[in-house]
Image (cartoon, rainbow, N blue to C red; front, side, top):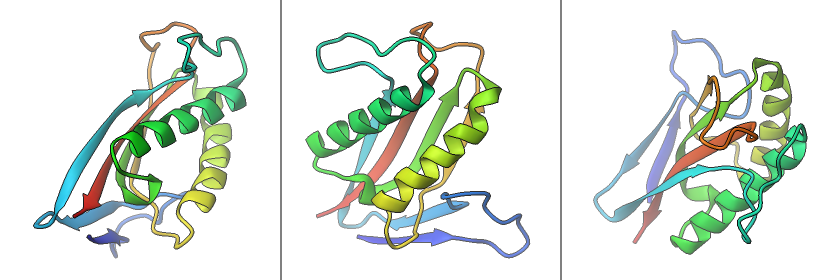
Amino acid sequence: MDRRVVHPAGATAESGRWSHASVVDLSNARLVFAAGQTARREDGSTLAGDDFDGQFQLVYENLDAVLAAAGASFGDVVSMRTFLTRADDIARFRHLRDTAHDARFPTGDYPPNTLVVVDRLAEPDMLLEIEAIAVVGR
């Protein structure tokens, strides 16, 4: 797969482990669209409450599992979208994301990550939801 991240001149520098854009040649690749993952365990129970760090870890574990089941990994992710329910969690999210991305993207080619603060998610006790798009070479 031919993937390259874009750090455009004339645009603000990235404020963390993300890039402005990913460019992918799809001639010999397939797209994987991972639905938004929340802090729901495999047995269907939720990690509810005020444990933002715990919810973040479970969301990333769920993304790992979904990507693996689709034949992909975080290294194949070309775009992410994050939904938070509390603006007060933005700094903590960025710290946790940056740490998680250091481990998952060792080359420093981070995917774009749109961050949105919303009123609530489908599950009212969830503090964040993250979806991803991956490109897997054939």
